Picture 1 (cartoon, one colour):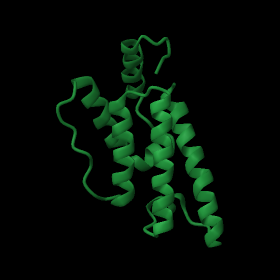
Picture 2: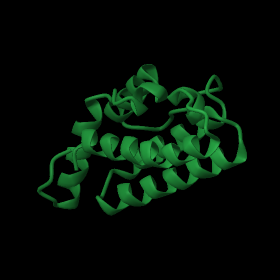
Picture 3: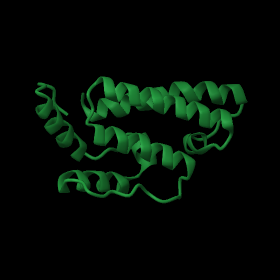
Picture 4: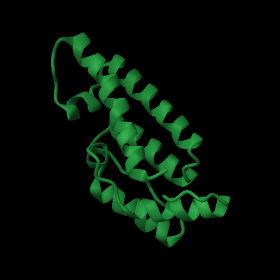
Length: 136
């Protein structure tokens, strides 16, 4: 599964999920505000969408390191957008570089479709380890 397809799926889920939230509030808000809204219903929706995304990432055999990084990072960012970033330790240098590069791009940018191309090579190697013919 290509990483850009994964991001497109995430964006579609967020769009559909938050569209119902916005309509129910009768107040159209910017994407950033909606994603960082502290109302319990928005947080519950975001968590539900991330749970769905995590299940999908698992179903398509996404590298567990990428899955954990994406889900934990998005949850952390949603809870505290200007807070501490994930701490990356004990990783292969290529994985460390890719994850750090995505952190520099940012979580909001990821939700807008900006994702490091380094994820693709990590995912391709993982598929090869699994003996799959897919590409990242």
